Amino acid sequence: MRVVIFGSTGGIGRQLVKQALARGHAVRAFARNPAQLEIKHANLQTVQGDVMDIASVEQALQGQEAVVSALGTPALTKNTVRSEGTRNIVRAMEKVGVCRLVCLSSLGVGDSRDMLPIHYKYILVPFLLRQGFAEHELQEEFVKQSRTDWIIVRPGAFTNGSRTGLYRHGFSVTDKTINAKISRADVADFMVKQLTDATYIRKTPGVSY
Image 1 (cartoon, helix red, strand yellow):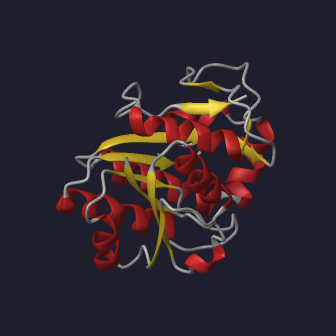
Image 2: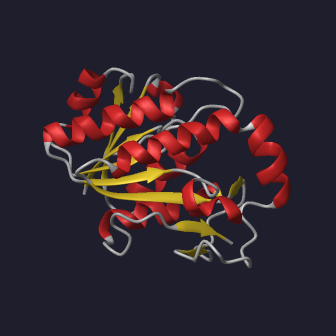
């Protein structure tokens, strides 16, 4: 497929670019500073742009078939890039006519809140990660209200492990057996697979070990 990846220079984004290319997709990596990507491939095109500028988002979507979004900012950074950027993406997709959207969110958002470990639920999220989770909530609302064929992926806490392909996904929000952790490489593995899998369209699958 012809795929645009937003957030392509982040920890998840780099994995998405590499793995999408490895699966034979033609990737257009959208970034404020494409030079940070440092990946070379015949099927990779980098595009400089700002996700807060809807015109540049629309331009990047021309001729594409799907979008993968891994927008994010450092945990303690207070801005609206994740929510407003996502709103621009879905608006541009609807205008240009691109349907498939795979969007990165987080375990603990929406009805998955009770799946968070106790220290996340009662200490980290309320006192340190409140802004980030509020942004995720808004982001998910913008995606769910869109006319796209969306899949919102909710991973556990990121680790730097390798891609194993051995993870759980689509589990119930009442499942207490997950450990709420997963490598960035395995998150990317799951997200790239959603480009060609209809199982979770308009659903919010969790993914974790």
